Length: 275
Image 1 (spheres, rainbow, N blue to C red):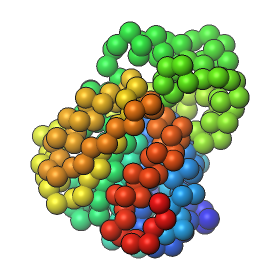
Image 2 (image 1 turned 180 degrees about the horizontal axis):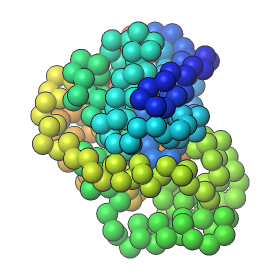
Image 3 (image 1 turned 180 degrees about the vertical axis):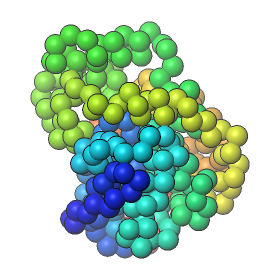
């Protein structure tokens, strides 16, 4: 895996390239480092060139430099493609990263060869509806001891009743998230504000002709399935799939399920992709 960095609008955008074949660009969500895509990259790198990066203000992409907006984050993603001389790529985004992927496809037509939108929404205002579960889990993830906050965060990304050993699970996931699950990246609040200010719902019909897969999780309190279905309904020809036993951490906690659907989605680009 080769690591690189480019300077773009006041921020060194750190990115990695691994594998060979058609290019897949991965865009992360709030406060998560590009390394969070490792379960997907490990599976796809044998047949695809996988590009991951730390979003502006996250991980090694410091300082944030320009103001953080969904439009700026999409422009950062485009700059990464430019840096590796890639005209178009399959684009995969999770949560806020899905909103950024939509913005990239809309603002730079032709750059997104296809889209996979995971646990996401067309409008940031649709995210994290104030259900009793979301209110309680959100509170638990922000107050109390670090151990308590870790457990609160796990209750968001894992389905109810799925945690046998919360401490061990949090330790295992910290490496992928890029930080202790009891902490938040300083940029988190700024990213959330940017997300809330973005609404691409009315522009979804413009994505006609872009093969699109929308992937939801049945127990996701941040991007509930009804939000995913509405997103899929808005993109002409989009396909919708739903993981029955997963939550917002779908690509990490249920990687095998997610990777099998990604393989199907990307198969036309690599006919011999292993399932």
